[in-house]
Image 1 (cartoon, helix red, strand yellow):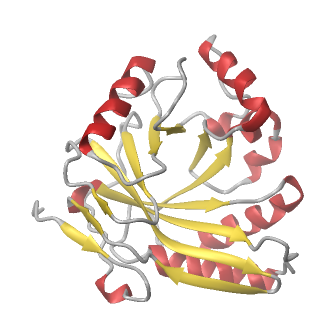
Image 2: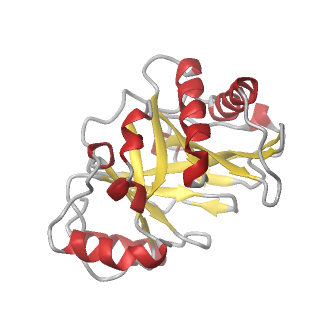
Image 3: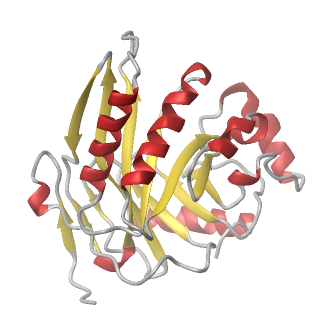
Length: 254
């Protein structure tokens, strides 16, 4: 495949949105994956063995309706490294969702429509829910799964605390759960200490991937996992090198 950089756009320019990938799903799970969230990113500096998960959709549940838009900012990257399309879903603050099967279907249709261009290897659902709203997440995952092309891996992010205390994650029809080891709140310190001491997540569904922030604390995490890297600002080559060295010091990925 050509090494020519690509530019991805959102903001309704779906015809210009290109996610070029090649080959089947990776057999080796121990990979670094850089999250490209909604901001301008130039990731052409990344080494060839690093993948990119790009947010291509923003969806907000507003009562009984949805607000949907595509990515608004450009991404420059090597085509073969962009393997994952991410849909961020949230519930509008101070507006109670009016959940229904019909709304779940509309939400799933929007997720697939805005992540499908380019036929990514993975579609990742980043859905912020409270404990009382977990059925909304499960319904959405099920509806998205039905719509995805055969062979597409379905991933979802999860609060790290869910992976330690919530057994409902086993009902999520996904291939990958990404526990996020950052912004964890009061429970975070104890969980990080347990991982450092050699423990693993209680839920088996959470044992194939990790989400780690650029300011990850000292410690270690289970090995042999896909490691998604979060940075609150646009990535630079120096910042990526620093984070990669810290992750490798954890012994989490190669």
